[in-house]
Image 1 (cartoon, rainbow, N blue to C red):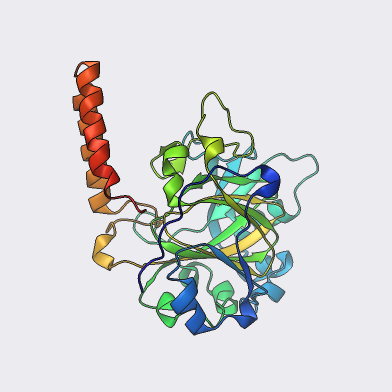
Image 2: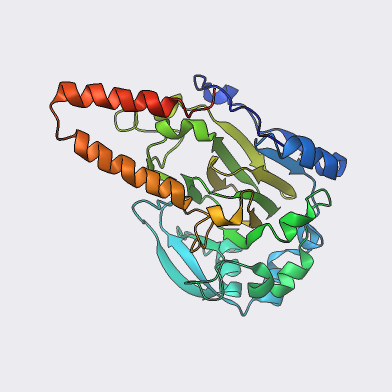
Length: 325
């Protein structure tokens, strides 16, 4: 099915009027409805009251430590709430999964550290994350809602990642190249979203926004950011967010959280980067085009201002022909 037309840009709403992500009762969603209506619309949507197999009822801290506690994991450790991927304000620490769960769910009094696990492949240099391999006992207890197409669990599946987060930690705003389901099993998360059409206002370096404090952005340093319309939702335990590719997202754990991310391909496999391990490498054709744009900007920068301005506007006019209405 063809994708729905991209929404036109509008002025950002005041904080009290931020539009919410639509929420549907997962028990009332059919496979046909998802495949024929919700998925082709290419818009975020939350499915509420998912059991996730046995996971939602079973994944308590004691159970997590019992069934997967010996597994060694590499954890982001940060002394600040806002994790910054652009400037790397965190370190990595190798812990047992039991130590991680203990420090996140029962932190020492006065401890300010924030911990975040995003599981990786068994060989982190060449393997994508796969919870069936890394956390087989937990994977056996986890399942997706029945309406999710079988190919998402099979030939279109790219990776599955376990995420465990301290209360209060905020992950930087970024986009991914692939569609994904964020399955929130334990805890509550605030998720803020921006459509791909807002990229010009988000001050992007690589796949990440430079703006860390999204609720109080520096108006001098980031004057366009506040004008970017956003969507927002608080994910409860048992919520699953469908997040289409290229949608920017910023996530803060309101409580200690455990979730599973499933990334899946919606384009032909040959279009993706062959060495992408996290689902966030730009498509090779797009990366090549961006390199050419940067080269053109450098070349135009050598011209007198009036010529630079004239030819830059001509190029913008050509690029605008590619934009959605």
